[in-house]
Length: 282
Ligand code: PAF
Image (cartoon, rainbow, N blue to C red; front, side, top):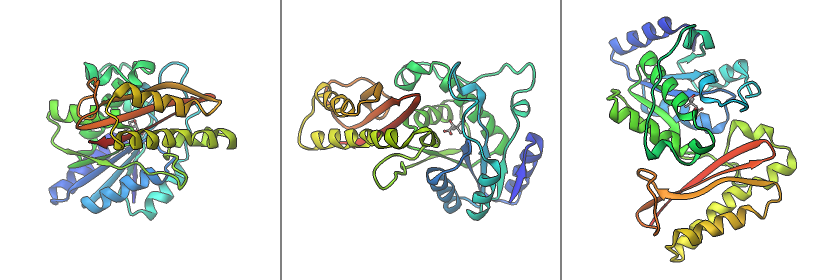
């Protein structure tokens, strides 16, 4: 497995792979890899000849006062794990390599899709994500790029830039990976102490309760949302950022549940903000 830190070098290497007719699968990550990331790597390994994993804690997607400095990092362990997963290359650039002095180009999606859910409390987040992901697409030249469904809004926005900016690649969504007790895997779970870790189970429980209510015939969005929030509030330290239900295609508003809907949650436990979601089809 090759480890690159330099943009020109990995771009040349990717071009050489393509000249040999190989397909490239890119897995963009911020490192501190867990089984959720490895599911992306395995999906890429199955679908493509070459697997490139980027590891870059992208400063421009963190807002002021967010956890950029504290975000967990372990490049040595990540590299060992990726070697075992038979990744072909890791791209782990420095901040200066990605954003040299004077850097001033950004990719931004406007409209409903990037103004609700996480965008409300993190107004500059998606601009940071779409900018870095666009750069990674241009650097690593993937045929397919793999993203987790856990960041549902992120993957929708990335699909939109791929469509609208004509990036010559396809996006593969990989289902959420959960612990046995239902907690969705996240690098931020390491911030939770034992008590908050237990309380955080209310996320997946409330999503399941909402799904059951819909399956039993309830179609009123407000009533399903009320069940979601009531269930979350049974955890004393849960502080709801949002608990919403939108059309899964474009995050448009719904009064009545129909078609495929996205039930999306962001909840703070102390200073740790967790997200989770569920797609339900009626
Ligand atoms: O999902 C993430 O880990 C990040 O937002 C991504 C896509 C790697 C961009 O920095």
